[in-house]
Length: 340
Image (tube, rainbow, N blue to C red; front, top):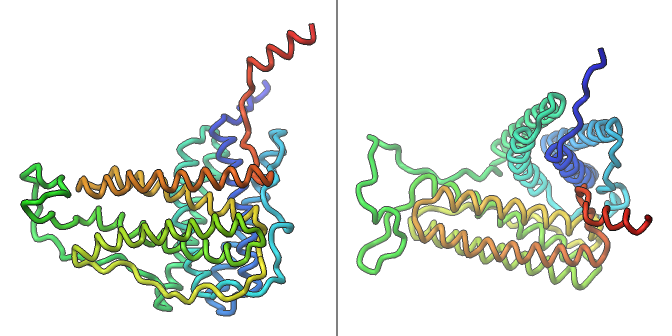
């Protein structure tokens, strides 16, 4: 009896395609980091991340070839200049990897939930475990070097309680003071501040090394958007006597020689924008003060418009790789009729 081999679903194809592009980008970035990292403990984290991405690419390529699906172009040695001078400091490399591991943890959880085939679920479970290990290793090294930025502390509860008035949900009042932020709201403000700080630094580094004026302007616009959002979130935290996250400004060198292609940096910033939009949607759903919800809802379209303009730039330069499409049945019918 012939064993039935289930084809990949559209969700599984999407997960593989997305994973391939992300891992091929990561391999280029991490390979450049390996060339310049000096600290041995940080280097071990970079090496683990690089090896993980390389292994993922090999496995994804095998899956696609077995299914007779074209392997995406993604990113390769043409998109990285390993001989370019150091653009980032060791602490930045570690912070970057820790941040990307957080995004990866969310991504792999989603990929598992979209997979039906046992081999695909197994692959993404393994990826989730490896990304969890990467977050663990990068966090341990960051903590040991005083680079890990902890979320704010708040007093422990002494008893549980229930909300006793509708004004708990209100963030606007001319007659009374706003209620203090709760732990859930603080956590999202803190995380989104951290994300935008990382976005600011990446945008600056990409702007100062890009040879194209339009790309420079788009990157600097991203920097300005991130700085604006950091200011908004920081102001809310400070108004509640909560210290916002503080990280070192010593992250980007003065090098203007591009280590990465503009194709890669544009993709990277688009990737960060997509992650940021998802974070804002989650934060808006989790927050209970309506002023916070409105903030997230008004800031999210700004990121979406920025990402759209970036997408148009990528299309203009033929840098945007098209995801696997479904078949246009109308076009197929018209083509058939034309041949008869």
